Structure formats: structure tokens, C-alpha cells
Image (cartoon, rainbow, N blue to C red; front, side):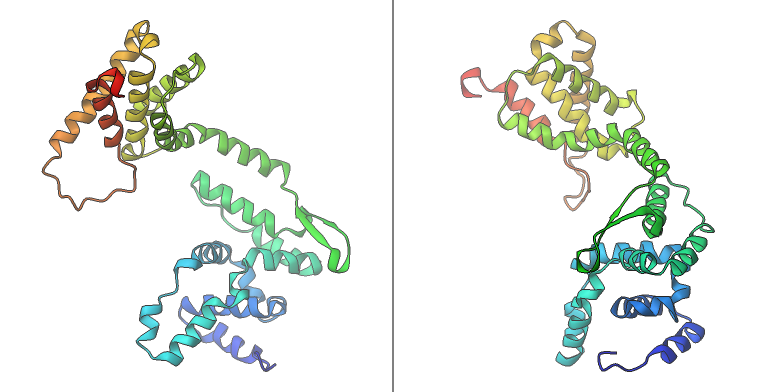
Length: 300
């Protein structure tokens, strides 16, 4: 291809005779090298929805996907060829961006892709369905506002109103889950420089503790929720004592959460030290409260 050779015959043979899914990634990257092929011999690839999702994931994770140690065992020449192929700039381009640009220039191709997209079946999961709809909208040349001309031309994606509403609704439904996931880090910053909490923040923390303790369905696994639950309880017990004095049910609930966390730590003392978890640990928050209660005021 770099020497200007016509590769359409080879591509056609692969498209007809290859029986491995792996060859599809190669063909898509050939199309990225020469996008005009997507208007001809590689055009059938544009009708398959998973190809766009697979490519999106590959581009997003490409920084970590080059297995140099494996390639070097095949010799320096093979290593350098693999490295150059991996690092080729065109391979870092997103397939959706390439195809959407082609469709804006060739509306006949755009209509072809839109007709295919209309036949796609959306995934069942809420997140996956929203991502699917975003990809389909980004492929539609009618969803772009083009300004300028020639080298100054710029195309801005305009999200369809129905899709924008679906995205907004999804984000709203996941608001509490995001708060739960973010709270442990926010708690660390507070505990590093503790200060009296205003009433608004106290009630917000109490509400989050309740949500993480089962008052709301936050849609997260227990190991992801527990750090926020314990952290919120610690913040209240250490930084909102006056408020808790007049809100005994919240105080008792926070204390129970901390007690259960401590008991759980004792029960797991014989657990393998090689246990790994993606969730942050809640132990640091329990430890902070223990030392906060144990140390005299002047040493805190």
C-alpha cells in the first residue's frame, strides 16, 4: 500500500474466504490507512454495529496493548515491524470519526450506513444502550453542523434532542452511584484537614450514608458501596457530634456501621494477604476514627 499497489483483490479474497474474526481488525485498519476503501471493497464492514464498539475499545486501550516482550522473542526485525504497525498514527483514529467524515462527504454512503444502523438491535443494558445510540447518532451525517470551507471546514456534532434527553435521564439515574463512588476520596480530603461541617453538608453526608446503607438502590456491588458507607459514618461521628446529639437515630446508625466494619476486620484476620479488590479499602476510615477518639484533643 505504501508503494501504491492495488490491494482490492487481496481484500476481496480475504472478505470471501477468511474464517477468522481476527482478520476483521486487520481489514478495518487497512481501511483506516486508506479510508476511500470504505466506500468500495470494505463497504460491507460499515454495516456491522459491533465493529464500531470493538474499534472504540481498541483505540481507547491501545496505549497498553503492545506486547513487546512477546514480539522481541521473534527477532529484532519482527519486533520493529510490529512496533511500527502498532504505533502507526492512522491506527489511533476512531473508526466512527473516519466513517462519519466519509458520510458527510458522500451522502450516498451516509444513507447506506444509516439504513444499516436502522436495522441494528440495541443492547439490553441501560449504559450499553445509550452508548449504542450515541455511536449510531455520530455516524449519521445529518447530525453535524458544518461551518467554513476547504481547510477551514469544521464539523460539530449536534446531539439529537431525543438522545440528549435519554443521556440526561441516564446520568440523573446514576447520580447517587457517582456520589457513592466519589465519596471516599472526598472523605480523605476532609479528614486530612478536618473542619466543622455546615448543616447542609451534614445532612448531605447523612443522606449519602443512608443511601449506601440500603435506603436507595444505587446499583453497585456491596464492596463498592461499603467504603462510602463507612467513610460517611466516620465523617459524621468525628465532625458532626453536636448535630448527632439531636439526631440519635442517625448517630446510632453511624456507630453501628463502624462497629460492623470493625467486626468484619476481626473476622477476616486470617484471610489471605494476597486478596485483591478493585474497591477502595474502608479500613483507613475506621482507623482514623479509632485514633480520633483515642488521642487527646491537643494531639489531634
